[in-house]
Image 1 (cartoon, rainbow, N blue to C red):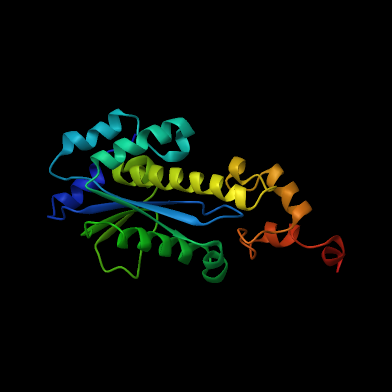
Image 2: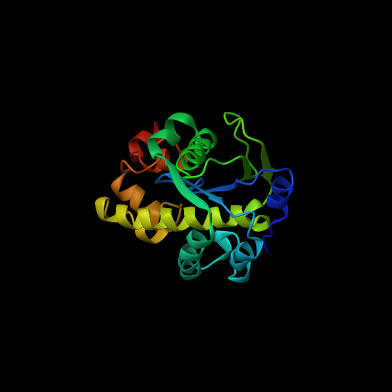
Length: 215
């Protein structure tokens, strides 16, 4: 279960506004990469630990229902929170790691309270001059990173459900853009949509005709 260990390290150094950051959607074939940023109140640790008591952890380990139930509590407890995204076109143009960093920076820029230090899930932001700590498996070890993970996951899943109506036939509402047999079949049948990451090998491969694949 995530704790406040990493947050406390920064708090004890005088950094009160520590933003935990995490992303979702890096491995998808379609849709944006989405990042969350959450600042927990350093002066109210008992309030922060309510999130842990409620079962907050890495969003991948939670059911959709549990994630949705945690969102209002995260927003209530957090001093500040925000979500940012990088589009499929930006993923194609920049590459997934730079696009992920872009999504995180956009989330940080939208925080109503400017962060003083960052906790990130196994990633650094070289373009940001704030003190920062990459944490391996951060969404399982840091409470604020776990909160950011849940906010980003719920936001992205809801977005993909909405986009399913704009791009019917691919099953985005079900698989959320990840590579599943249903998604593979739809890509082979319909070809890539504007929502797809066209430079990704499965998309590029399945989006070509049999004749092109043989050439």
